[in-house]
Image (cartoon, rainbow, N blue to C red; front, side, top):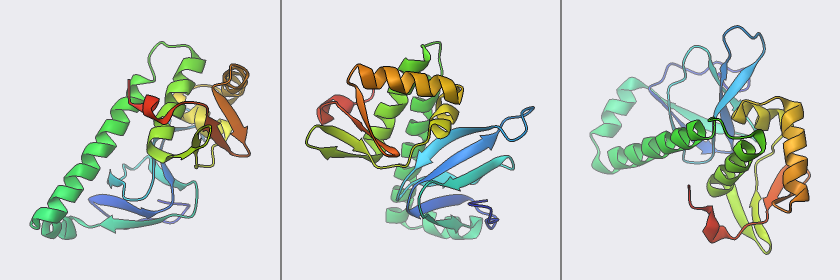
Length: 183
């Protein structure tokens, strides 16, 4: 499902345009969701599980690749290569996100998530890297498994230390672009 619209049965989803968050409902907590990934253009995602949803953060166009179409694409070397690279990128993003959920303080988990978002969705600007994804405190909280109020406090701390500047619903990290390599 994306934006309340049921997707056809698929083996893969390809984000063609826009930015979407893959979310999963949390078992015993009605209405509570966890963000599994934030994906932009050319992202290749595995099919969604029954408790997952693709939430549009901007206008999104995604293509559902059926199992039959996937078999045909995998027979084409260039397409198979592109699909493999896309899935490896998605796997790497998931590993980075999992690493952020350790025992680190909330502000550090949030800092690592913002750096990850800057690597994947950032644009170099004169005094840092701007994350061009509309980020709410609630969305950030769902990505780092914190309460929204905790994220609000942590964002304030990161802003006071000079790590970030808020620009409406986007953020500019005051970092050198070359410092964005994953830890």
